[in-house]
Length: 423
Figure (tube, rainbow, N blue to C red):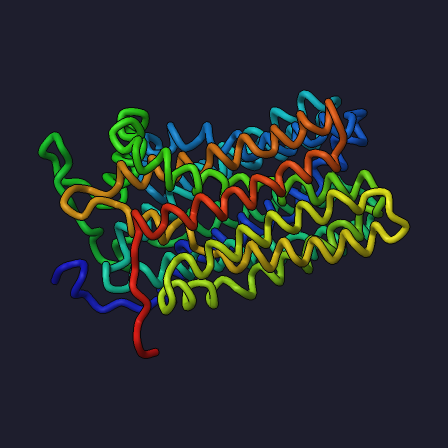
């Protein structure tokens, strides 16, 4: 019986992929709002705190290159286990960090571990989930990740109320990673649960699991692939990079802004947790809108919302009601981000070549988006250093609106899709 034909139930991948992903993302979601605060406590200026917070995205970008080799070499499950252990080491470095430099190294390593974990879980789905169920499984996986990012800040807020220590929140990530690694170690071999993985022929003629070959193809010859697809990546890929930039800017700018206007640490975590809930609530609706009406119907509103939110925030820093404005903008940004859930993954699938392996293109597409996600927080930190955080927010708002224009121009050209006439 082939991979595509064998009986399969979605709940069978819960222990192998969904729950480890949930634990990892809960831990990451708990600490991310606190990174600028910890950096500030170690003596970093607001700009340096933003730079350190950006290291998680820089680490993810750097991890895009070796992660495919790691997954192809040691396998999907082992890669997730080792990524969890690397994240634990990185968090321990953050906990004992005596200065902002060491903290930045720890945050960078967390980003590196995240890149490996993310590709490994995607490769696992490719190997063991039949093609007929794979889109639903990957969509659910994306929802699980967002669920962790809204649960994590609530746990952080509760612990901060109880202990008053940011260190306790970083230990949450350690516990979550230990739980994820233990779960993966103690599970039976995937073949006993799912049957043999889907096999494909590698370029050297050997037969390997589909997930490992996908991981290898995504990373090998990355820059050659980028050059080969330079036309679409310079055009629509620029839009993808701006989407990544706005998402990353929001992740770094909100906690940095909260620190600058004096919101208490537990309240920062609570506000960002509520915003994460808004984001999470929309991930399924976004997919429905894209499938029924087309990609533009989520891409344009999402980027306009992200751009407008940054622009509004830029004018509120010194207002007497700046805390209320911050809360309102945090919700606007989460609403806009939620509307665009799954946009980049869907566009990548639309654009990927159908007559050859899509993996190299998808690796180049993801790298393009991650490049924007890495550059934007660094730009926010730089503009905060030479000007003000309000200027940084305003400039990012302009880039958000520019992203809406780029996507509006090039999605119809490169990824046209007619809406369905009936539900």
